[in-house]
Amino acid sequence: MPRILIQESASYRLDEIYRYTRDRWGAEQADQYINGLFRAFDDILVHQAQSRPVPSEFGVDGYYFHFQRHIVYWRRLRGGDVGIVTILHERMHQIDRFREDESP
Image (cartoon, rainbow, N blue to C red; front, side, top):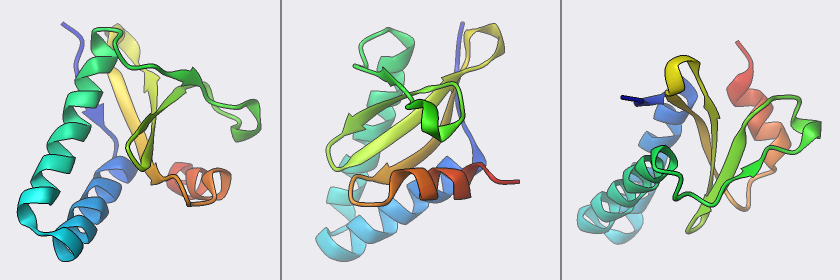
């Protein structure tokens, strides 16, 4: 069965999102938001996420979808697994931040 794999940059972004939300609106809201993100990741596996191809200027094959105020970037991996590449706030400069997260 295919799995969701959180890449290092996405894990870092999840931590940032949790801390920011907790500090601004409390732990309960932070938990709800992160749990919602993980439910959205699961939606990818069952083809329920309304994803679009990543624009060609990003220079990678993959997809993205909006979750509330964030944009989730993901790609298919071997065996049908899904790799969550990064999660960026909609106000961030997407190409620059995406490239930062993709650089070795």
